[in-house]
Image (cartoon, rainbow, N blue to C red; front, top):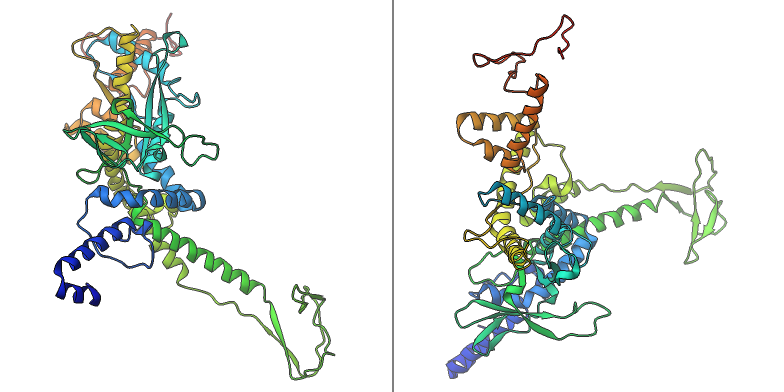
Length: 505
C-alpha cells in the first residue's frame, strides 16, 4: 500500500480495502500483471496475482495476438518458429486409418475419406491436411483456431455432404462475458448450468477486415464448432500464443540487431577527416569535391590517387570500432527465444556450426516429446477427432456408410520424424524390434505408415518376386544383411537356371 492508502486505512479500513480491490482489478484490466508481451508501461513489474487463467488471458489476448502477428510478419526468427512447429506437428498431414476389424469395410471408409478430404475445404483451396496445417499455424501464432462445420446438400456432388470453414480467433467475440440466461459466457464461449460448452459467439465477418459490413456476433451451437488450442491450466477456455514468454525478448533482439546495422552504416560513411591549423578556405581538395544536403563540403578518394596537401593539413582515417559482444548476445538471446517458444536453437537459426550427432539427437528427442504431446493432447482430440466424427455422421445420413453398433474407430497416424542419421536410427529400430522392445506394427507406424497396408504391400511384392523366381539382395527372407543366403525350409524348390544363370522359362 502507498502512504495515502495507509492513512486512509488508519481512519477507514473498509475504504482502504475497497481502494486496494479496485487497484487490483485495474491492474488486471491493463494487463500489467498478466503477460509481459501485453504489458503497458515500464518493464520489470513482476508481481504475480492469484487470478484465474481466463482473467489473465482476457485483457491480454488481443494485444498479445496482434503483437505476435507483427513479429511473424517482420521477424525472420519468429516466422521460422511458426514454420517449424507447424511442420513437425502436422507435416503433410495426420492421417486417419479405419480400424473396424472388417478389412473390406475399412477399405471402403478409407477410400471415402480420401475422396472427401480433397474437397472438404469450404473455400475450395486446401484439402483436410492443408486445413490441419492452417489451424495449427493459427494455434501457434494466435493461440487458437476455429472451424465451423458447413453441411451441404446431397445434390452438391460431394462424396459426403459436409465441408469445413477455418476461422481466425478474431471471429470469437470476447465481449460476451458474464451471466447469460441460465448459464454464463466466458470470453465469447457459452456454458450451460452444468459447465458444459453450449455455444460460441462468433462474428459473421472478420472484425479486422476492411470490407466488413457487420460487427454483430451470433451464438453458434458448440457442436457446430471446432476449437483448437493448448490447454495449459485447469479451467482455461481460450488459447495463448506460443510466443507469449518471448515477445519482449524477440523485440529486443530485433532492436539490437537493427542498432548494430545502423552503427556499421554510420561508420562506413566516414572514410577520413581532414584537419588543419589554418582556418583559411584556400586549402587544396584531397579528392573530387561535392556539396552535401546541408551544404557541407564532401570529398571522396579514388583508388591509386596521389593528392597533395597544403602545409599544416593532415588526414586522419576513420577506424570503425568492433563489438565483440554482438555474436554472444545474439546467440544466447536466440537460444532463450527458441526454448521459450518450444524449439531448438538450430531449428530457429539454421546454425549447425557446433552441432554433432549426439547434440542434435539429444535436442530432437526433447523436441519430439513436446510435439507428440501437442499432437495427442490438442491437435488430434480437438481438431482431427471431431472432424472425423462429423464426417462419419454425415456419411451415414447420406447413405454412404451403414450404421453399425461398434461405430467406426480409427487410428491417427502422425507424420514420421526424419532421422538425424538414417543408418544409426534404423539400426536402433531394428534392434528394438529384435529385442521385443518394439513390435513390427509399432516400427512401421513410427515411420508414418499404416502397418496393415504396409504389410499387405510387402506380401504382395514378395508374391510377385516368388512368382518370377527372383531373389533380390534386399529380400531378408532369403538374403542376410551380410549378403549370405538364408537357410530355407526343407522341401523348398528353387527355379532352375542355365549355364549363363538365366531363368529357364
